[in-house]
Length: 527
Image 1 (cartoon, one colour):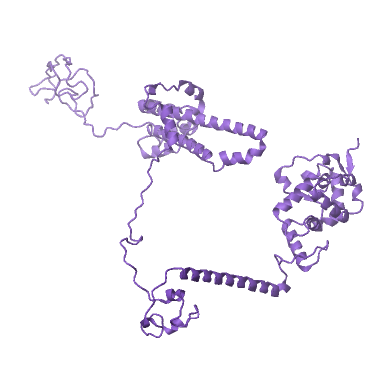
Image 2: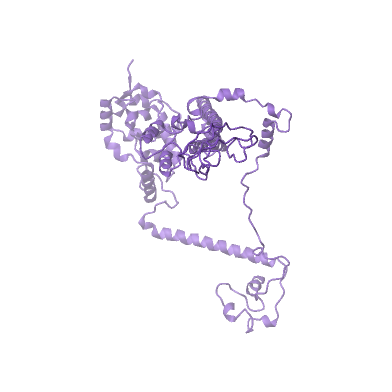
């Protein structure tokens, strides 16, 4: 079977599309002679799947202005909707696909590289007739105004969008007509206003002292002769004239103050908003509040299903600081473990949602826009899900910061250097950066003990006999005796009962200090 088909055979294919029937005469008139014998691949008979970004670049070898004037003979401007309708009809027509000249990704579907070059050379004389929609509208509008058209289309009676320079008088007349219509509208509004005033209760008549000739009247002769509002002779003015020119009277007294003087205050919104009633009831039911089995809510199975390793477990404290933390870090690790499980659950939920979305849109592509409006974009479902993930990750970052503070050095230089090291995916401090920092001689990673506020140990009858030597608190070892002034050291016998001078952890106990045998040293200096 021949894999090629001629453009003439494609031209003879019948179609019920009105656009196709209108496009055929334009193709017969403008395409070069012998175009019916041009060959194209039979793949043009099947409409391919063309991505949207490539569809917008498609152009046809059909003169733009004659085509649209033939399809829409009475239009002076082709809208975007009509332009796309013609574009769609040509793309669904086999001959229209055979006349595609760009982009190259579509042209090579029906022609080889050599055939593409020959085809583009044949239609090169027509390239001057291919216009985008904006330029085509300018040409169509100019032809409609001047009465010159290749297809001899009758010029409409309305004024074109872009009138030529010789139509200034016509444009001026249109403007005058527009102004007259606006003046008529204003006159009608004034008549309605006068009618509304006349329909009201008759206003009290003014006396002779309110005549226009009175010098004390507000209605002075100058104002009576004002050209802004034409007034009738004094004494016969209409109700509207009376209402406009009457003296300004003080406002009637009212028990209610002006709204401007009424005190108004604004109350700030509560920091914790009240929940929706339906969600409140659901939360109470799920938590079993007010019920006897409130403490029987099971979570072990759910925790087991959500428990994962790696980054979803608490980060490990580096070995350098392992001996410095105990109970506080243990409590923080428990909180971090809970937040890690919640993070995994939220991410797994999103993954399942995306998989369900893809499966749904494969079976029902028509609901794509509705799905995006309900679940994605600015939908409340999307914003609530994002806020929940943001809250969990932010709280875990806060827990990690607390764990890091437990092992920060006391000196500011080492503290700042350690704070610059971020956590890794497994440890509280990045291992590589921490090992490099440990080699710095100016940095001390271990927290130094603070002895400020503690008294220095001195011979108080139970410690060292040497001033300034610190005795370890809680040491129940043998006590050295202090020298007597009469020469030699005398053994000090510990009396039974609580140690009243003891300041260690065994104060008040019945512990007896062992005595030390007497040592005679005649050379010792008396205390």
